[in-house]
Image 1 (tube, rainbow, N blue to C red):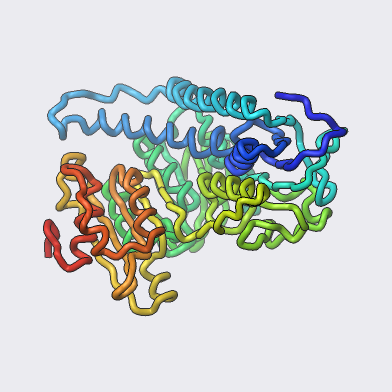
Image 2: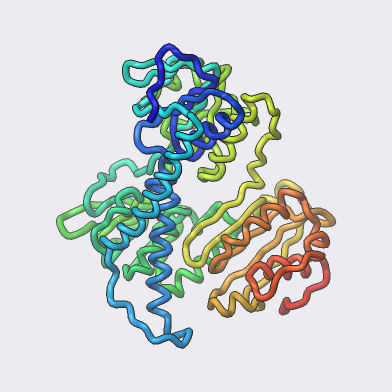
Length: 460
């Protein structure tokens, strides 16, 4: 960490060193701008230390457990002795530590001044960190998010958010997951693979409600097959922790007993206590409002990442950080299209999507059509033993505006899906490209062949 001079004026002062903040810092430094990056905890933020990376490491451990447990399906005789949680955490923490070390090196080599401490906004050009005031020609707000809970719920040993779920010393026998969004279904998948009996409670009518309805239905079927119980359209009434676990009462009077209640009701913006409203930054429901170029209501002040309304995804914040750095440098980058940002949920089966759902496309374009290519016709999916589909949504006579996939490892196909939607490709355009065999990537090609009117391996 380099000391920052209280007398120096920077081109940028960035408040928050998570995905959006450090990406902005690195790109700005590449462009010759002077940068101070303020972080109260660890460089890399929630994504690196409490979110994306550690949870995906846990999901990989869970996948390995499933592979051993189901090895007989593939002609391999093996047995799962146990899940060693301390060893699992050592693996997870090792992944995080290596990435953290690498990121620290990148920031040092870029000659970004990393300022350790809690920063708060004093004005459109000043950030206070302890007794030091950093002055910037431009300020970037990137303070990230926190795990929400519900009024009346007291966190403890048996009632935790995702933060606590990543530090458990043993696998709980019975888990109730409160929330069927991305975080909820990922942890439901983890705990099921590690050997827990899992029930998901979701107030909305379906799981992963932001995804296409067909995806939600397929996930619910897959979860039912895995032994995961779901209670949708019902809210939590109360939860009481005792020495042995937690007693849960749902709306309507149903009672559940669990060793752990995981509260996964989403993430809130970290905008309190950092002087935003006091300095004149406009907030709505705690989020910082911006225009399409990520300017806040305060001239010269930008905001990126989870504090900006929209998808709370690390790669969105990362991209916004790069955009802001280039905008400040005068490169006039094109505004980011939210609809072209890929979304991945890393449960088993995985969900990957980009663009509009069928319902959204109907609202926007009116006349649309869709096609689902079942992975039952895909050789690699049969080898992996996964079920699911690739669903395309197109404007009638026009481009593909949505790609929605569910099945093992479909996250690896979302890059091509993003290009298809981002470049407004016609099904006929994609159908002309050769997709390697045997890969799951072929399923994307087959779906476009079918939508172009020349199905090959499509049944029915």
